[in-house]
Length: 414
Ligand code: BGC
Image (cartoon, rainbow, N blue to C red; front, side):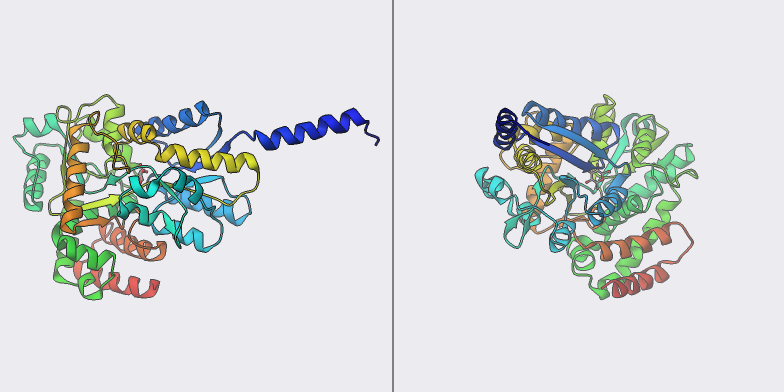
C-alpha cells in the first residue's frame, strides 16, 4: 500500500501529539461495593475525571477483599495486570518481590509524602526504599457499633469489658433481640477474633501472637480464654448468620433487629450512607481493652506499558494522597485520613475518638497492625490463623484443641 506524503505527515503528527498529551487512564481493581464504599470510591472516580482521567472500574464484590485478591492474581498471572489495585499491608511487598509493581517514588517525592504521612504508615508503602503504594486512610478494626434506641430501651450502656458485653448480650437475648449481628464469613470471624484477642491478651500479647507468631503466646491460657469468649459469642449470633455479608449485618443493627456489631469503621460508612447519625441513631466504642488495631487501605500500581496508563498511575497516586481526597473520601468511608495535616473539623465523634486513640496508642506502644485485615502478616500465615478461627467458630471444637491447631497451622505455614 502506498502512502502519500500528507498521510505520512498527519500520521506522524498524530503519533507525536498522542505521546505529548497522553490522557491519563486507569483500570482500577477494588472491592468497595457496599453502599458506603461505593459512595467513597465515587469521590475518587470524580476527582480522576475532573483531572482529565478516564477510569475503568473493576469492582470485585466480597468484603475483606479475598475475592479481589484472587481476581488480581489471575489477571497478573495471565500477563494482563490492571493499572492499579487496592492492596495493602505485607501483600504490597509480596507483589513487589514478584517484580510486577511500578515505582511511584517520583510522585511521592514531588508531593512530600515523607513529610505528611506518619512513619508507621509510610513504612507499609515502601519496598526496598522505593515508594510502591499510596495510602488512602486509616481504618480502625476494634470497634463495637450499636443501635442507640435498642440499648436505651433495654437499659444497657456500651460495654467496656467483655464481661459487660456478655451480660448485655444475655439480657438482650432474653428480650428477643439478636445480641450480635454477624456474618459467617472467615474474614468476619477473624475480625471479631482479633478484637477479642487484643482485649484479652493485651497489646503486648497481641503483638507476640500475631506479629511475632510466638508459640508460647499462641498456646497460652490467655489464648484459650480468647477462644472461650469466641465460643460464648457464637451463642449471641442468630441462626441465619452463615455467609451473610458484613453490610447486611450492619443493616440489622440499623433496623434494630440486632443490638451490636463488632466490625471495622467501614461499618460507620454504611450507617452514614443510610443517613444515620453517630451518637444519636448509632453508637461507637472501641472493643474492651487497650490498644488500636489499624488497617490502612492503599493502592499499588502495576508495571504496565503505555503512556496513558503511566499518566493515569501518576495522577491516581497524586490524588489519593492529596489533601482534598483524603478528607472527602474518609468522611464517606468511615476511616480517618492517613495524612497528618488534614483538619478533622468536618469529621464525627467516632472519627475524633479514633484519631485521639491512634495518637495515644502510638505513644504508648499499643498501635498494632490488624492481622485479620492483612496488615500484620503475609498471606500464608494470616490465612493459617483464620482457618483455625473459623473452624473453631463453626464447630464444637474446644479451646484446648483450637490453640494446638493454631500452633500447628502456623508451624506448617512457615
Ligand atoms: C478494607 C475496607 C473495606 C472492608 C470491607 C477491609 O479489609 O480495608 O476498605 O471496606 O474490608 O470490605
